[in-house]
Amino acid sequence: MSGHTHAGPIDRDRGCIGMWLFICTEILLFGGLFLLYSVYRYKNPADFHAASQDLSRFSGTLNTIVLITSSLSAALAVHELREGRAARSKLFIWATILLALTFLTVKGFEWAAKFEHGLYPNAAHLLSLPPGQILFFGLYFTMTGLHAIHVIVGMGIFGYGLRALSRGKIDAEHPVLVENATLFWHLVDVIWIFLFPLFYLIS
Image (cartoon, rainbow, N blue to C red; front, side):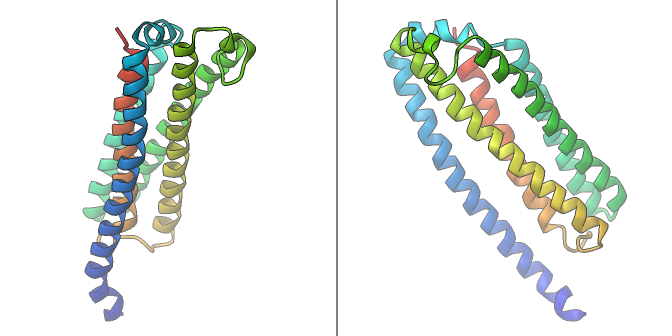
């Protein structure tokens, strides 16, 4: 009994350090993609601007609001758990998962519209456009697709956290799983905050 209690702070520190190291690798990954985007946009400003007009600013703005709200609900889940209110923490985790699902649904409709108009990699219509626009949509699908995978992973981690909470494996003394899930989710949010203006708000 005491072994688990005394090991808690050490396990928590290790878990947090591990998550921060993982976040650093993710920053390097997306940082490289942002750098690549910047180089191609610098070389093809007119084509990038023209291609961005085919994206829905409404969808992009809606998804930005959804993700920011989900980061708030995730933070509240951690707060409630630390205060010993596991039931309320679970409600906020459910809210985060539902908001993530909303994000993916909006993104799914947006992607479907691009496929319908032939604006996807290797589509005949896209290949008929100027090289800069081809690069734009290649980066768009790569970067937003990779981000969507992170959203799905985040949903999975929160789902595991819900299960652990229901089984009493997580409490106010051992909140590291929910804390790390929230750290990861904030990363997902920040990445989107960069993606949104780069693709949707080109002037």
